[in-house]
Length: 196
Image (tube, rainbow, N blue to C red; front, side, top):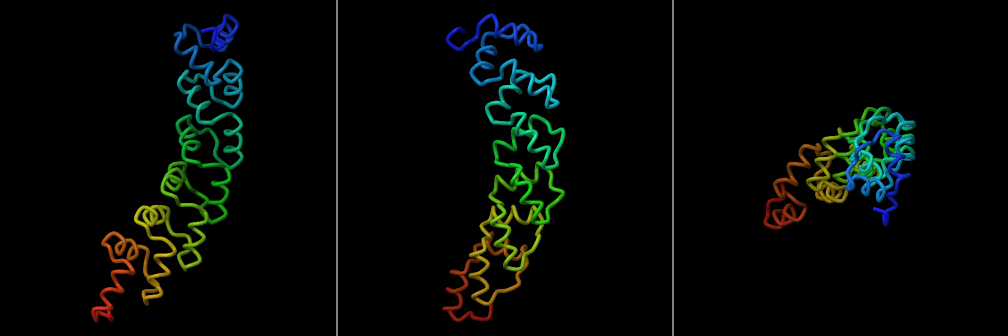
């Protein structure tokens, strides 16, 4: 325990913070990951009281610290659960990402929506590219589906060059899902099926 800095003062500090009777494993875990008595006090000041040792350690490991909580609060999300804050950190839902989504017109996104967007690569840049091709402000599920199925700006441009313009997002998705690629269309046109 001493090698990790767990001494009588450290244990007394955690007891004073309300964490009495911790196992040796929990004591070492809190010390290694920085879930110290001082960190407990910072979390309480940020409004997070009664957290388990595992929650304290998770927030430290993933950087869901009081400073991050304050930034998220400033971006318009208050009283989030530890699970939401940790998910945000794991998947890169930063205050900058939140602001950029709002600037693009998506003002009422949930944390779950933004996590889903980040997981599937729906970035502000992707949204800008899609918007420049005439698809302004599609729904979140459409954007996620586009990324999942590979409907990119390049795909849309290639189809437009072949005469397929103003396709709906649903049509674009169906084409990708069923393998109707620009290459496939060119092959068919080469076989004399030019009026598809």
